[in-house]
Each structure stands twice: as C-alpha cells, then as structure tokens.
Amino acid sequence: MCASFAAEYKDPVKDTSRALRRSALMIMGLYILVPYVVVGALGEQTIGANPVNYIGIAFEHILGSYAWLGQVPVMAAFVIAMMTATADGGRSLYGIAQSGGTIRQLGELNRYGVPGRALTTDMLINVIILIVLGEPIAILLASNLGYLTAVTLAVGAFVLLRRDRPDIIRPIRLAKPWVVIACALFAINTFAIAVGILNPGLTGYGGLSETVTGIGILMIACVLWYYRQRIQDKSTIEWRVHDDPLLPLDTATSEPAPVSDSRSHP
Image (cartoon, rainbow, N blue to C red):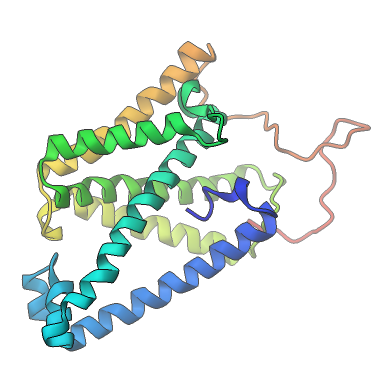
C-alpha cells in the first residue's frame, strides 16, 4: 500500500522510501513478537485447534472478564483494513490502467481527484466474492491467494528488470544483495503458493471453491489486460519489450546517457 500511494506523497521518491522501510520494520517486528506472545500464552496445541479464533481465546486467557476490551482494537483493525484495502485496490487499478495494464475506463479520476471507477470495481468484486463463497471468512483464502501471487510476480518482475534494464531510471536505489534476496523471496513465495493451492484446508478457513475463486480473479485480470492490448490499443502482444521508454536519454545525441554511478543497484 505504501508503494500504491507513492504518486500522492509530497516528495514521491523520499517519502516512498521512508514509508516502505518503516512499514517493513513495523510489520517484521509485529510478526516476530505477536506469534511468540500468543504461543507463550496459549500453547501450540490450542492455536492449532483454533486457527481462526485463537485471538479471542488469547484475550480471554490474558484479560479474563475484561476480554471484551481486546475486541475493540480488533474491530477497529478490521474497519481500517477494509478502508485501506479498498483504497489500495482502487489506486492500484487506476495506476495499472494508466500504464496500459487493464481497460482504459479504470484510469479515470472523478471531480474529487479520486479513482472512483476503480474503487467501485474493487467493491463490486468483493461483493461478488462474498455472494459466491457465502462465508466472509472464506474470502481470506481467495484474497490471500491473489495478493500473494501478485506480490510474488512483482518480485520476479523486479529481478527481470534489473537483468534486462540495468540502466533504467531508478530514483530509489538499493545495493546488489537485494537482487539475491528478491530471488530467494520469489522461490519461498512460489513454494508457499503451491502448497496453499494443493492443500487449501491447511489454513482452516477455505477449500477448493475458494482456491478456484482466487485463481479465477487473477484470470479476469489477464483477460482485461489482453482486451486493453488487442482491442483498445490495437497493439500486438509482446512478451518482451526491446525499446524501453524509461531509459535515460541524452537530449543532444538521443543515445543512452552514461550512468554516473558505476555501482550496480536494483
């Protein structure tokens, strides 16, 4: 989400870098701290038997008769998650449409400067999923599958761009080891996706229908991309682009400008 809203920051380059780093550190800290605390309070067997509602059990165990207090931040978190996910999805659809990755109609802003069409599309997709699956909790499996797949593809695309376009304009630069880290994350995420697809019951809140729904949503995105390329833009499908408009050019010679920093950065 930090990357999705980069265009709206006061200083897109500096603020995006700050947001990504601080968000990553906060999430990493919570993902390390919370599991240890919950396992220490309840034990692995209790969590294994209650993979969905173990948080409620933890509040009862820790707060006793005041366990209801723990539900307040959980409910607030759900509201915030819904708002941010909708805003993130709408902004992402708008950006994808602007770059030619989906139908043009989603790349429009309303009079308030908000991607209203993209936001409405995101809402309709969520409503349809809820109707098809029936259980709100089952949406987690379908959405997590799509989300993790999208993130994994983005990590793989990053590695390919660094290999094929080493001189591309990169306002945010990182050191070489991050390419290796990205390859490792791509492999780990791909393994996790494969395990999740083949064993949807492991999550405790989904099955085959939710898996098929998640894959179906991804396929709809592919269909819209094809429609944009072939019907709206009337262009040929290119799996590998050879002429990159984002390469730095010397205005005098129209040749790629020399890179001042000899170090290779992703």
